[in-house]
Amino acid sequence: MKNPRAGTIRASEIGSYLFCARAWWYRRSGREPDNQAEMLTGTRIHSRHGRTVLAAGLYRWAGYTLLLAALTLLAVYFVNGLI
Image (cartoon, rainbow, N blue to C red; front, side, top):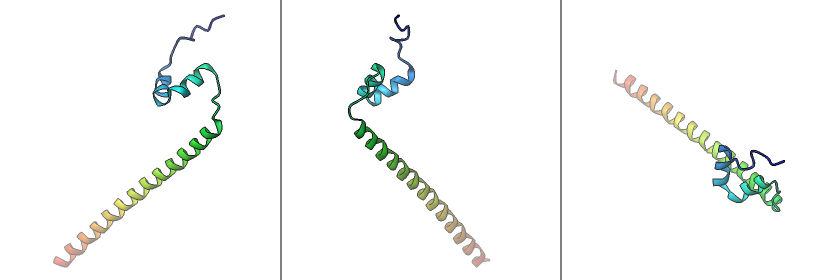
């Protein structure tokens, strides 16, 4: 019996295809790619990079917070010094 959804492409598959047409084709045809070790290494590298990007964002947020606190304290110092 033929699968009625065999020719249907889901919206989520479009993004997958645009990212990597070969990987989309492998998933679509039910085949496992031969480069599993390389794909696992790439996944680990992307995870590590994601953590680094997250840490950089947190450090930036902390830096802006400390800068705002320093400017506030400087403003309070000058206002109290002028009175």
